Length: 193
Image 1 (cartoon, rainbow, N blue to C red):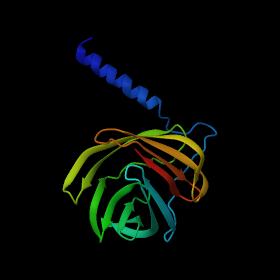
Image 2 (spheres, one colour):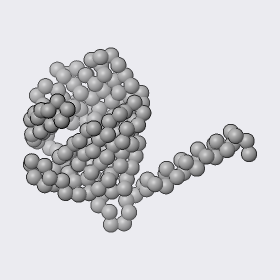
Image 3 (spheres, rainbow, N blue to C red):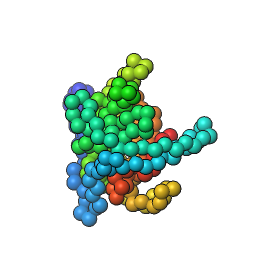
Image 4 (tube, helix red, strand yellow):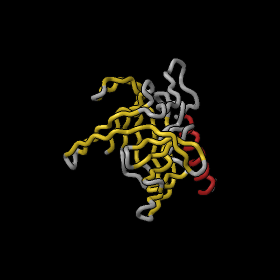
């Protein structure tokens, strides 16, 4: 067998092994969480702590109905910016200020892959455009996995949540962990390192 054939065989085996670790369906008895979007008008307060800068800020967010590039989407606004999300996937598409794009993910950031269940994993890949600075990165990749379905305690209370962990990939150096609570259809805790 030549080096080229051996290399192709190795790639095929690696791809089959990767597919074997990510089942298309949840195991029997697993909790399966479907896509959820808070109702238009829903408001909540987010507390952000920056351990490097040593400060804490609170921000009120509101879900709004929005349109983006001719399609119906939903937005979350803090009164200054509107973060635009795809209704079908709940994935981030763009950030707008005064109706103008500040940053865009094409096609979207791929954070969610519904339905979610413990053990599910996927790779998100998208092009990121920073329109304020005139820069783009392609691809931005993150390896996601659903690590647990557990209780998470935050100042607003204790929620049953799916813990998602994002590991850095190409053009990405951020480790992300967040807890999505299906009861309130919100990410109730988010840690970036």
